Image (spheres, rainbow, N blue to C red):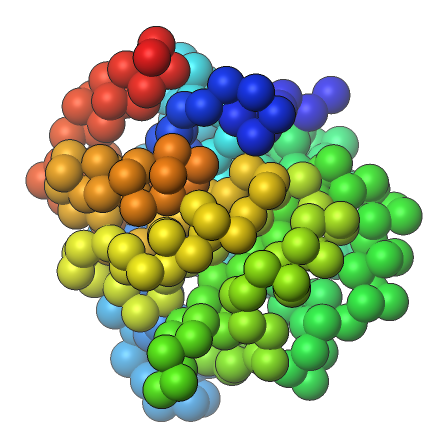
Length: 274
């Protein structure tokens, strides 16, 4: 049974810290997502952090601290990453969402392994457009209440944000606008949105993006990208109008950064108490 973190939009108002576990070749890593590309493309991948610590240890820590609704992302389709991801969701049944190469062929397997939701992106986008048939098929397969749509995006020269896929290298024609988001809400329980222009770079929050998400989204949405300080958590809270949850990655001390994980958990608990 999935553990829901989706109470805010139906009633109480509080921002949540959503933790993460990013997996590359079986190991927990923090990578600048926009540099993650196929080796044959000749681009250098920038890794901010790598550890031998097991994914299940991170999951157990999040479970201990009551942090429901975090995400486990496989940054590659290799067997080691899949095994590590399944170990993570197995250590916190119903507490973590799982993404990375999700399709109708494997979604049910991940949910049965303990994931509360599957996170989907490239599978439902094809040739730069939403593949409505695939999305509907996925909804029929596992139910919209078990689906998180990854709408990670970049800003174009026109100043608008567009969803990017295929390791964040390809633009789609889907603009993060109220009409499109409203339609997608009928096919998902939550949204996950990385601000790709700032993700992994500790450059601060993409305030304009968070503001759009807070105004346009009527289901739970989690923002990731650029959070580096305790003040940045408050920036997300204010810019999102208290409706946008937040993920912190490379900046956390558990991932080699300087921001104490325990302080972020304390901040999270304070939001729930208000």
